[in-house]
Image (tube, rainbow, N blue to C red; front, side, top):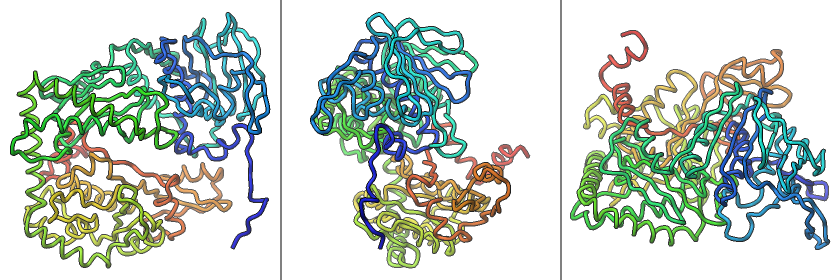
Length: 620
């Protein structure tokens, strides 16, 4: 047993704690975390716009590598000296510019009724902490002021300055300017900003904040400017880009608390309602999305009659966004993936229900069409899940699960549990040892699953492997709502990093897509990004998709690289960080086809005809 004494206790001054453990503040230290550093000061500029003090946010990529800028045209950050109480109640005088940029949990978002994207005064400090160089200029009291940091520590105290010299010949007259150079040693190897993230943020921010001028200047000096009239423009753009058709007219609603714009499309198998709080994306949705959908379901009950469907069926093809505006919102984590604020649902549901009800009064035909469509979708799925032969085989498979399923041993809720579908007994045995058994389970498959796109219904119903997989998920087909009996929040495919492994993944995705599409809509299906090469160097495990990437991580080619032919060849100790350890493993969330064309192409790829596959491979 290891000892516990004063030597085990650490204290980090200033921003050092963020540098030491950045994940709670910026998310994973990959391209998402790196983009988070740029996004945080940009979100601050949007906060100024939401408060009516700013009309511009401009993101700039410097000609100098790994250097980024954000500027606005707001009122600037206060720079005067203010007296604060320290942790012992003693009085301490500080410049407010330092408090805002370099003091953990210092800022203006802790009290009052200001609508803002930030809540804990951490965002821009995280950018500062994770940067080799960080500098802020602000125009205040008719004068530019500046403060400078290195590795999260002040190097230049607050002082008067000249206007910042921007790259690409750009200039600025007032506002706040942030320049930073991320410390890439704090991130995963070869981490780069994905400029698709930047583009998407700019576009969506412009759609969400009507009248705000959003600019992005690339490394080449080319500037793109976006100004929109609000959420309705977003819907029109999305429908056009997805090339889908719309049932009826879009539902558009705006109030002091929320902006909503949604349309019902024929994008089969997908629901794409983006969630935001004060303009900040919530990747996992939250109370505002729940209120929107619950209100939609309730509002359509007068048109339901004897038709049967679930809320999931009704959401089929739903496209749009909901942006909720609230002071000091509560999220599940610092990256603000999910809005969990208890104040939201009661107010939002009541307001949204009223808006939906009013909308259907002048769109009765559209309402009837939507409930009919939902009912037909439910029947399509229910017919398969109620097949007597399949129910019998799944029940039989439940009795023999012990031989294949290494179940969760803890009391984690279903939403937090993960089921790994593993190829082969050997890999299955290793995975069983490597998993975190309090919330992770493994299911060992034998052989390739049946391709359900190119076979008969009887063959599917009689297939023991399919019955076993359904039993492993926890499906109770005799239940009133079988889909509600699935016991896992994530289903993760863990196949070998070779052609056969990729084929098995395709077959599993086909099975779930055809018979349990709700798993994709709810974001439950994931795949482990299986590396093909690994090596040990200076006590560290290195892995990658190519030998070159492993050599680069090691910093030398004098290292013995091993080709991973299958997971059965990897020890449980090595498999754990590669596939099971949250924060280190690499998972891809599998999204449904984004439009009708994508659905048809997927069906063609996995179907009986070889013509499409030959064309795809260029051999037709």
